[in-house]
Structure formats: structure tokens, C-alpha cells
Amino acid sequence: MLFAAGLGTRLKPLTDHCPKALVEIDGQPLLALTLERLIAEGFEQVVVNVHHFASMIKEYLASHPFDIDIQISDESDELLDTGGGLRKALSLFHEDSDPILIHNVDILSNAPLSAFYESCRGEMAGLMVSRRQSTRHLLFDDQLRLCGWQNMTNGQVKSPFAELHPETQQHFAFSGIHCVDPQIAQYMQGRPSRFPIVDFYLSICDKVQIQAHPQENLRLLDVGKLDSLDKARAFLREG
Image 1: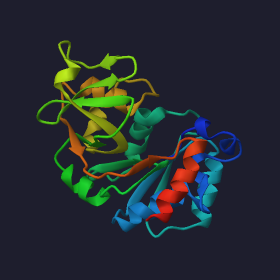
Image 2: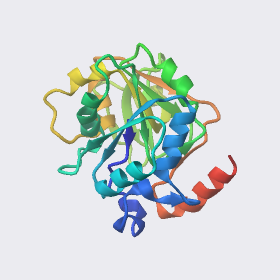
Image 3: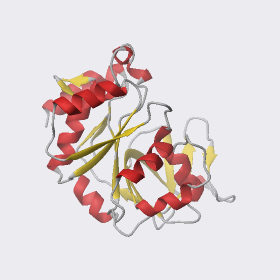
């Protein structure tokens, strides 16, 4: 599942005329860079969600065929955020689908995607995390099960556990790469059409296992702001 529906407001004015997914790094759109990475890791079916300049993404995929099954989850009528976007897209995966890898279109990394995918089998959700500088941390217990979230700037904590003490938990930064069992759909029933996936995970982590998968030596770049474009070019040139 490739999240490509966002408005890309932090990349304005580039995204005034094209979707974030088609912003180019050294002549290659983020969408192509991510798809090629997924193909190299052995993935054969990808669902791409679209909203902002949806027709441009559809036209790009039609005119640049990739040698895998790519389907579109169209959110043109309403941007559903990451949780709602996943729920809508689930119907496009095979009913007996294996776990679903979720990847943001604006993430560049050296993450071992296929190895991470395999390690998530049997889990309701697995989150790729690392110990790196971040203003927002996910909190995990000693068994690396998700139990909360903390804003490190203002101290705000989100958790279904009333007596959670953040200082006693393991802190990791989320990579934007995760994996879910399609059965997670049962926990999405009754939610509004639009909701963020991390808040959803936090709301159910006292009921189901949501596991951290820490990565050593993870190099990750969020290409979400204009000042990250030069860093992205350097990242790709370094291989």
C-alpha cells in the first residue's frame, strides 16, 4: 500500500501544480523511486491511493508501465487520511492476502523492506522504528509492544493505558513504514471516514499486538519539505 494521496502542503509551491508523488528528485518522481524500490525488494502487487491531482498520477502510471500489478484507490471525492485510506484500499487486495506492507511515497531509506515484511507475519501490525532524533516518539514496553506516544516538545502523551509512565518505556521514532494483517479491518468498523493510522494503532494497542521492529543503521529521509530536496538528491547519489 503506497500512500500518495496527501496534499503536499509543505512542498508548496511545487505541489500547486502537481501531486507530491510526482515531485522529482534528479529527474525521477518520488512515485517511481518508491515503486522501483518495492519491485527490487520482490513485491508484485501495489495499491496506490490518490487524491491531490489524482488524474496526474493515474496518467503517469498509464504512460510509465511498471512490471507489477498496480491498482488505484481513488480518494478524489474525500481525502481519507492514512487510516481511512488503508480501510478503503483493503478491498483491492486479495481476500486471502498476506500481510500488507505500507509505505509513504515521500520516504527514502535503506530499510530492508522484504526482510521486515517477512518478520511481521503473524502480527496484527508491525512498525519499523529506530532510535533517531525526533520530536515525536512511539512508546513500547519491554516486549516491544506499542503502548503509547509522546510529543517530546510539550510532553503530551497518548495511550489507552491510564497509568503509563513514558520514562519507563522504550522510545523509538516511527519510519512511516509498517505492515498490517488484513484482519485489522475488523477494528476499523464504526470509525469516521477519515482518521490517521497512528492514532488508530494507539486506540487498539491495549487489545491487539502491535509490535516494534527496531532497525539498526537505518538511514531514512522524509522528503516532505522544500529544504529536504537537496538532501534527497545527495541521498540517492550516495546509493
